[in-house]
Length: 138
Image (cartoon, rainbow, N blue to C red; front, side):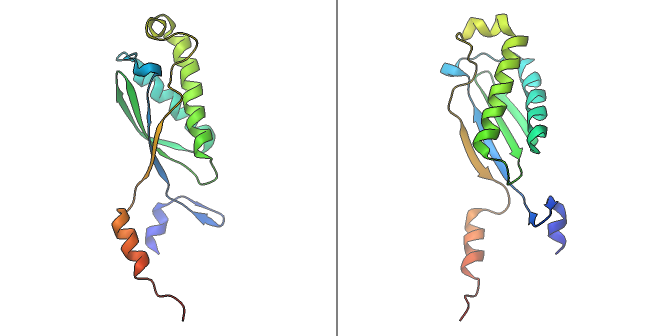
């Protein structure tokens, strides 16, 4: 099974889990300057490391951020997502306070909601077809 070698291995488990996340600032305000996403990415890399997760890709526009995160199965995704948002909000508000306060007030940066989708690997139709072709025990 050579394909397993590219997946993280731990005792009793092999995994390949990715999530696509989209975070938006409160009220979808266009708060991000050109340098803020670079700092936000660095913060999120550090937070991910604390969870054993890897920020594979990060990008966005003035009013939202996209993340592709590779995460271990033991991590509750809602806990990871909330930590990413909480820590980045606290540090970005601290470091870019005067700018952020022009757009947002009350100590908030991110909207309480987020978009999350599992992703990676084969398309669902291929996985469904593979499962359908498995032989059931007689």
